[in-house]
Length: 101
Length: 489
Image (cartoon, rainbow over all chains, first blue to last red; front, side, top):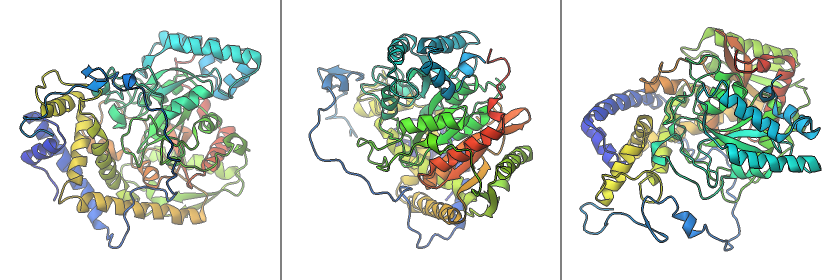
């Protein structure tokens, strides 16, 4: 299971919306291979029947009452937009682009 | 003693008696920064003017005898991953360069309501991913004890700022040791509270089930003061705990008689641990015994698996959290992008540094179809085993004492080409994050003329016992009063 070829690295990068140069692909293939061989040691443990932990503490999640509150001012919400029109975010055309979304 | 070298408690006393003003303290911080300068590269954004206005207001309150809290008027630094309204937050990443938050993080709100003067932001590893504060667009931070060495990470700027006497208190965040390890490397106190004790609202997310904000300071008492201000439930963070916040300062009675300290042999037998560091830690534990604490052997048998479980869980969560940086709403957008998918891919590829990309790739891989059970689910099961190790240990002891790090501060560049080697330096700290329990690192002494940290781990929500033990130790030792040569005038 351990080890990742350059093409596997490229596939994972595509899933993560990252583009790697050939040099980066080689470096990541080596680094990730090394890390994945290290984490193989978890397979030494028999975890049959052990419940996975997603959150450390058993405290219950508190709920707030469902009352309307003032939202963030839309002007402020778009204040960091790389491109905006009024209080909308502007992005390149979505429809018609191959593989969009 | 110079102004910056004062502890928060001493600064508070002198502000209260009006021997010093908040403006005096701010002048001292700005003077120290301009003087020896920021040779440690610990501060990435000073807000001198805004801080001046806050100090003037604090002085008015203090003159009227109406301070908002014990830290009213005291200068502090926040880590560059906690947003402040109207100020830049970069997370030391190109992808957030220029980002100005429209709101305050909960931790910043707590500081403001207490009257603290936020003098600026401290340097860190990009997105808090690192153990050395070398992965930063602002350049590496340096350890005031030896500028060729790392201050640790990822809250390296915070630890270096406290060690150099720039400020008496700073906020860090700790996902796998990012407060405690730099505190150890820089000879200061650093506390990771129980998961959920401090609201994460407005803390830029790295690994949401592990991230926790906490204080760095010179003394356990100062850490107690800051924790009291930060702790508590926040409806905006559904994982923040609705448990009452005790008066941490009143727990500091200097009495550890009968305290049961568990010594986990796994932490003292780890491969590659520096024997000189281990000896300093053993001697520190002996000091607590002389103060009346009892030690006993405990076992945390799954410790050798903690790093593997941690790096699978943390990277999986990070790959999901960092999906939000897509160039659409804030942060860097590639100028080369013509289509939507290019906008995503090019913005992220240009904006993230190498370590962040490495972790996103690892996290994406372990969550992908076919590997999820073997890696991510397996790691979560091991997390259960690690938690139950601690539960069993805390049936027979009250705190667990360990080294914070297997070594003293390493040289800048020493591990930056070997990610796995860097990950392994977190071997003593990640377990507390996986189990959600609190931990504190305190100055234990010196090895090779560099600071060594003693880590104390406690039961969930029992920060008070950790602080009491740490404070008792500091009453009997002067390691925390040692300062790096040439920094404090």
